[in-house]
Image (tube, rainbow, N blue to C red):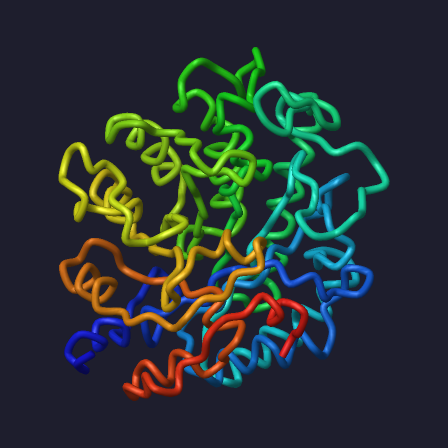
Length: 372
């Protein structure tokens, strides 16, 4: 691959108060190594190494807000209380290594862990007490629960800014709490947070974003991760047309989202091939076109296999970036998030910049058992 093609990945970008040296984002990936929910020295080293490896923006693994049953894994880190001291050390190390960083703020809703045989000490909660269509789990949130949840996210966002993080990301994808409000199959509410349309079911997220925007001020960037697919149903689609996608995402941008982090299982998949063909815009491309927001594209970047196949024990070979960088060069999306390739190789971004393709590493599921 020519340096002209990869050069688009290394252009600087400013997003309000956030200055990025390049367009490579470390995707948030649950690692489950936080003892008692507290990030420790291993977390400092883990994120520092990726910063030293020339990643421009690091998004942390999902860190849960201070709300009952917000996590589904005993190794998932908190983003409140005593955990904040550990996150302070993380951001200081990342800044010293020359990268920017934001925590991914998370509430799992009714989703149990895929890997841990563990349940929270209180019932799981979700918009309507449903894990998936017709599958009850936990309890439905009362309006006061919803208000408390919003307040918990706001506190976490304010803490992130106070600690020196450059941005925050809200996890609104993959069937977790915010996404469960979007999804008609899990949001059967009859109050103002429910509704027959996707736009109506987006009210919770829009109010959450607006509350955070008011608390952090106008210049602090807010990223929102969204997806069509759910871990409960890989074929689920919230928006079946550009109009529905606009109805869903535009109110969130108007509420204060600066960047939409558009998660696909495979970044090269066209979102609406019936409109612009099999090589048409992907999810991030359509989201940018419809809302005008900056977008991050993610999904099997730098590897041959779908990350879902990890849970089947499958490995992935390194993959070239020609198709990705060509789309970026056309302006379809603004940043690209890299997941598993950065788990196995903290120097992945530096190798891309230098054209060291023969040094790229394959991904094996065993890598998930280490935290280096």
